[in-house]
Image (tube, rainbow, N blue to C red; front, side):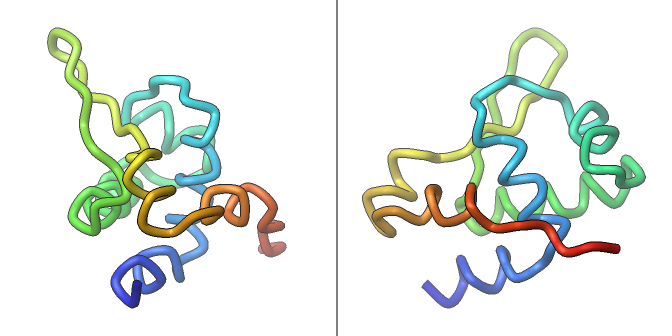
Length: 92
């Protein structure tokens, strides 16, 4: 649990997870655009989410798409994705 909260304690990573909640496949570049981060910074945060087990990577041809590990997260932390969906982003 501490590992999950440590990785989700970052506002940028929370923004990425909120974006991924809709299940739409996006590349790191597309995610970066939508959460207003430089691509390299977004890739860093995506790696953190992957290493913490929050996401997995789906590959289609030459493209890689980060995908939430919904079933695993809900099994270990029931309701966590609903809570994340309701988090209001902080103003910059």
